[in-house]
Image (cartoon, rainbow, N blue to C red; front, side, top):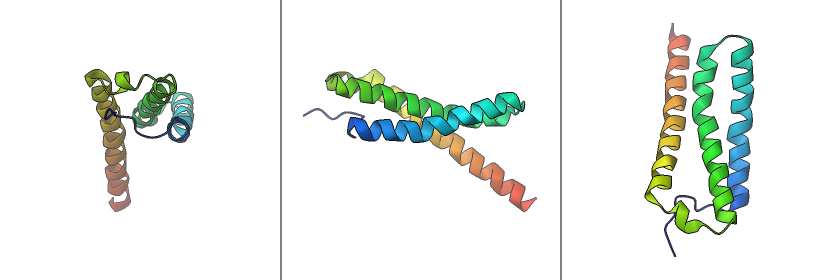
Length: 101
């Protein structure tokens, strides 16, 4: 069996994609409507991660697990996760600085 980036069942990937993607889409809508670029910036990471999870779920359902194990898809997964986690950490730090000041 190949070691792939997406080891969750497709249903779990769809659930996580929805849990990340729907609030990100909401934040993008609010950010555009209220002219808040920070909301747009912080919504990019979760939206990319949700898109990647949806892509992995589709590929796994189609039986293309070898494609998920490719170097390119693995690199894309790490980039999406890095943007998601990095944006989350920056958001926490900024909120902590606002609480102090």
